[in-house]
Image (cartoon, rainbow, N blue to C red):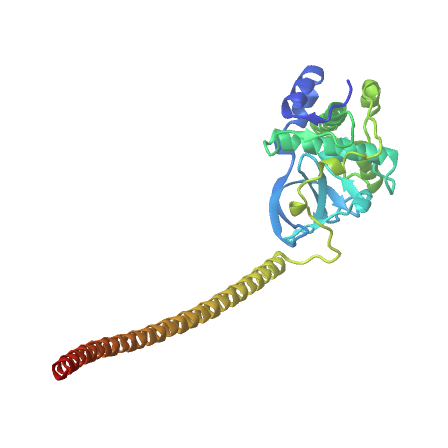
Length: 344
């Protein structure tokens, strides 16, 4: 079956219930895994709280800081931190070889007794990441996942499921032997460190029976060329911090940043208000000046109109005087002509 670019829960469920129903039921037991809400800080120094899945330890196989996995369906992230730390730190891509899977995931991943990313450890990492994606689908936190590594994710789930089933069978065999020995009065003793180490190695290493049954499962690991195409939103992407700080410090820093931004916004607003008030005052002054000029112009216009009326009245009086003088001259001329005629 050729790998697909995208899978949903139905794809894994149909495949598991068809080809390995018993083992699929074992790996689907959510009570065997530990989900918890954890906090990380993204590139913008903003805290985010999400559901993470505990998968192992960091730096050491046991007793080291816990490692938690978080997937967005298109990108897988690992975080580490102690119980007392409220904010987890991102495991850089180059340090993922320092992650040692534990419990169920240690059984799925197989041998982890070498340093660095060997083909065997790379295989285990891809198998575990497939299971993490499957569990996020199973719990309803994702609707689908992307096959960013172009691997047989269904085959990976089958490999992990069969490893768990074989390990469970070994555990049941040991339990039956202990019960049988106790029933026959055979005392039990504390296992030696060598026996405990052998037991741990047997649990971490897939059994030969599983390896023989899994000959038909081929897992391909090409170069990771598709990861960048399916990265999560950069705004929510976590970042690596060389020094871990408490959640309180990040919250205080975030609040301080918000207060600074609010103060800057307030100052900018006050500056804009002051600028607008200055413009309004200038416009009001111009309006008053224009009103005063208009008033003065109207007064001058009134004065000119009054002067014009006075000149008009003077002109009319002069016209009346001229008319009277003309009439008087006409009469004088008439009398003079009559007298002249009488003298002749």
